[in-house]
Length: 313
Image (tube, helix red, strand yellow):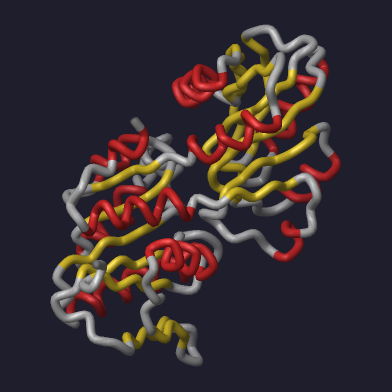
């Protein structure tokens, strides 16, 4: 039934691509994505894609620039091979935090990346939990922004039941936390923080009651873990029984793992939009859930021109 679909993957998250293909019942496309001796990305597509509906699965995660170039070159290769439609499946959209001018002469890199993907030849973008919803408007092609919420909530409902509070680590994530808490029938708290510089955060105040509660800090990503670790410390100081973290994208750069292991955090619940490093896999505090089911169903619906939005109704 999916005779005209072709699914390919770069090197950033092959495991997720294989899971998606398994659930779709198709084989992962044959492609060599390597580098020349000087570091240039080399792509060779080893099967016919003429007239096909092509999906390229590639998270633009570390090494970010290499992953991005692999995606762009693969899109260009498919366009020149006469693919009928090319959908860039980018579970984690890198550079998303640079979505506005935060200082004079600052770039809006999230928009630049959108232009690059469009210019390369993508006809559609499929992503998950974009850092900011307005990034969809940076594209002049259709964008489907999926949510990992169903997967995260299913796990939380089974493992965290009574006296739960969902906490937004900043004011920008309040809407996400409120929707998450509503589905759990949990109360809401907000952390007022002041960011002193890139990858630095200082917890200032807690809005809401967490005393005697099980706290779940909800964010779209955990990078250096500075925000969530300081938030966890503040929650414990305010009388929380235990503190866990839910996020979609486990960026986990710099001192993140060491900070998490030494922190008051009980568990960090993440998804496989970004593959964990070997060291992160050994961290007992990290629990990985797969979003391959949501992504594969979205791919199937795009192929059949069905509604993607109805996935979350």
